[in-house]
Structure formats: C-alpha cells, structure tokens
Image (cartoon, rainbow, N blue to C red):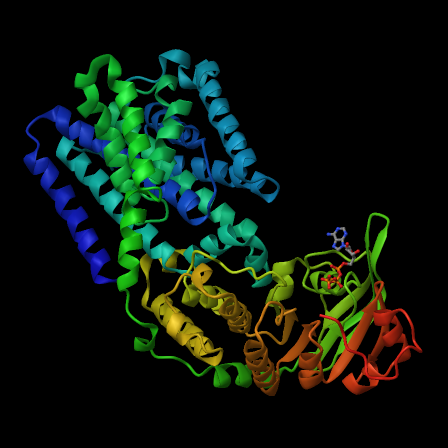
Length: 595
Ligand SMILES: Nc1ncnc2c1ncn2[C@@H]1O[C@H](COP(=O)(O)OP(=O)(O)OP(=O)(O)O)[C@@H](O)[C@H]1O
C-alpha cells in the first residue's frame, strides 16, 4: 500500500476513534452512526459505479430488503444481530444476482430504469405485504443491538459500525488493486477488449452487483437495530439518488471518496437547517457548484493531481518477456484450422465457405480488397460473430460456438482495427489485465491481500513490465493509455495481447495509421514475436509489411478464399490481380495491394 493510502487509513481510524470521545450528546453520536451506515452503503455502491461503471438507482430497495430481513428475523425468529445481518446479507446478495442479470442485455440508462423499478417494487411490497412488513405502520420494537445474547451499549454499537466501515473501506481498496478491480474497470471501459482477453463480463458484473447488494443489506440490518423501528417511507427513490450522489460527489472509484460523500450528504441538511424554506434549494445549489468545480468528485479530482507524482516503472523488477513467452510458446506452437466458414448478415454473405490453415509458428497474412470479409473472419474465429456454417479449431480443440472469452482462454489473443484500449487505466494496468487469466487467487484472497495473492500480483506486474520493455513502452508504464500517441497505443495493444500468453496472435491491421518508421518497428516486432514460436495471423493492407514478414498469404475476395500460397506466388496469381484491379491481363508486374 502506498504511503498516501496508509495515511488516509490512519486518518480514518483517528476520526472514527475520536468522534465518540468528542461528542457530548446522544443525538450527535446517533447522527454520526447514521453517517457510518450510509457510508457502508456508499462504499459498496462504489464498486458498482466506480469500478464496474454501472449506475444503480435501486440501492434504497436493497437497503430496505436488508432492513426488513434483519427486523423480521430479529422480531419473529429471535435472531441476534449476527444472525439477522447474515440472513440479510444472503437475501440482499441473491437479489443482487437477480439485478445483475439484466446487464446481459441492457446497460446505461436502461439499466438505471430497471434498478429504479426494483426499488419501487420493494417499496410497494413493504407497504402491501402487511402480514409480514406491518404495511405503512412498519415494524416496531426491534430489539436493541445484541450479539450472542449480549446487549450492546450505544458506544459498543458505535464500535461495531466504525469497525465495519473501516474494514469495508480496506476490503474495497484491496479489491480495487486486485485482478477483480482491474477486470471490472476493464469491462467498463471496453467490454470488447475485455472479452478478447478472456474476461467474463457477466461474472464480473454479477460480482459487483452482489458486493453492492450485500453491503446495502448489512447496512439495512444495522439501521433497523439502530432505529428500532422501520417503515416504507424510510426507503424511497430519493434515498437511492442520495446514495448515488454520495459516490459521485466523493469521487467514484476512489478509496475514501464515498465516505467523504456520505459525510457531506448526511451532515449538509443539518448545517442547512437555518436556511429554513431555502434548505432544499441551498442543498441542490451546493451540489451543483461542487460538481461543476470538481467534475470527477472530490477525491477523483485530488487523485488526478497526485497521479503525476507516482514512481517510475523502472523501479520495479521486470521479467524478460522473451523468456516468459518463448518458454511457454515453444511447448505448444499453435495450429489454427478453419473449415468452410460461412457468415451471413441477413441477405449478405460476408464469408462463403472460407477455409484457412495457420501452420504452427508461422506468420500468416490474410489480405483482400475492402469489404472482402477479413474482419468478419477474425471476428468469427475470436468468437464475436457466430458462423452460419463451418467450424474452426485450435490444435484440435473445437472453438466453434464458444464465447469470445472462452476462445481467448484457449490461447487466441487479438488486437483491433480501431484500437480498443482501457483508456482510463494506466499502460501497465492494461498489460496486467491481459495477463490476469493466469492469476489464480480468489475474491477473498483479494480482499485480504494474502501473501499468495501478493506473490501472484508481483509476478504479473513483473511480466507486464517485461512485455512493456519488449514493445519499447517501459517509460510509459504509469501514463493513462488514452494519452499515448496513436503509434504507441498500437504497440500497447500488442503487449496486452501478448500478456495473455497466446498460442495464436491475431493482428487486425496493425500498421493502419502508422508512420513509415513505426511500420519498420512493427515489422521487427512481428518477427520477434514469430521467433518466439507464437503463430501470427495478420490482416493487413500494407504490402511491404506483408512481403517482409508473412510466410503464407491467403487472399479473400467477396468472402471467398481465392488464393493461399507464399507471398511471391500470391503476388503473381492472376486471380489475385483480377480481384484487386478488375482485370487479370492488364499487368504482369507483381500486384501492389492498395492501402
Ligand atoms: N456486423 C455486420 N452486420 C452487417 N454486415 C456486416 C457486418 N460486418 C461486416 N459486414 C459486411 O460484411 C462484408 C465484409 O466486411 P468486412 O468488414 O469483414 O470486410 P473487410 O475485408 O474487413 O473490409 P475492410 O478492409 O474495409 O476492413 C461487408 O460488406 C460488410 O458491410
């Protein structure tokens, strides 16, 4: 943990310890405990909003679920706080899974609508299911906080809440710095690239929803025990908006931001009481001003200032990329075989019975005029399109019908025609996302930062730095990827794909938009990759590059393979000349493939 974060945690611990000592009346302490409960919700919600990039406006519904579950189990079944809290966590967690399901189909504003609907349904059920929830009257006489039969004093309960918040902030911070945090951010920033690197977006989003739901559920139980009374009007849509605001105001994705946001939004109404009828106006106006001045939230904006002062990457030991990649690749040089692939889009046949074989360890170029079906071919073999007919396999393993992330895990990595980087992550983090399929530690190990987890992370980081050196980007490790010049972004995409330790690398027009010097560097890089024993399938328009690096060239025209041979043979093939120039006899000179 960096010193700055250590200081932050120290400050948090100091504040949490000092407050009960300093507060001289029960009202003050109770208000602070309310803040702690809201902060717990905000920190959990931050995983969903800040890391996974998903907006939920139904958090009050999960808070209510936890509250009612806690209250009902405590009043009817006699559960103590631990039993009630655990039950609430399980119930809310299950609803978290349920809420995550729509993300398979909807996102953004549509997802927000789904979560709003969920919140409203919970509110209505709380009102209508009178026999269970007490209807509008709610549930009264919830026992005071107790653990294993021991009744907790006000201060002891404060301790439970303070420790819960502290541990949760630490857990969320650790999660953010683990493969799960990086995975969530990667999926949020480019789902396509994340899938191509073997990440399962559905699983990751479900994890984020479950974390946000479980924390809201537990906070709900804490609230029920604090208040000893709950009713539906405590959990309204306005509260969901308030929870969302806590995260955004404090700084989404930051460690302490949601706590600060929760503090401000708990205490602001108190401070503004003297404005009487203008209270709501002042509340809204203040929020507007803060968000206008600090659009990334309070901690987000401070964090941006700090990011320029981070250490250089060279300080971290690197694992030589050549040894890492070559060792594993030489064991399994890959052969890709595609048989009679046909892809139709409605009435248009983009690929028609196209067959291709990339021999183990070769550089195989796939060329053809614009619209010939090259991108369709690689989108199909990387699992982004389903073939209408035909099959393809990697070293005998049938890949047809597999999801893109499963194909990536089978050893096929790719780059994109229009680069698909995780723009707001650093160059190093981008490459680490590429390498994280090889990490084995679980969610619990992430949260606890176990020694085994840290060991795996160090290896992953060292390998990533080695790969950055391999492509000449070691000096940019801590830059945000979106700030790299275009040529370097292309190199980063290659480093990231290599980090997945692929057996077959698909390069989709890697020379597009590069300068002559950059294309020369790319040529050398492709040679070095091939020398490591990694098979390469290269889609390119740049003829000099193809001639220089390809062992075999396959030509597509109108979705059909019209030639597949050595570069020289293909250049002289009349069918290829005809495909490019519309006539086979017009020239006997080698074909110049237009860029
Ligand atoms: N998702 C899609 N939906 C409908 N049609 C598509 C889709 N993707 C590609 N096509 C069509 O399939 C045909 C082949 O396109 P594709 O992009 O594979 O060609 P390409 O050889 O990669 O071309 P370019 O060199 O211009 O990138 C084109 O007619 C294109 O319009």
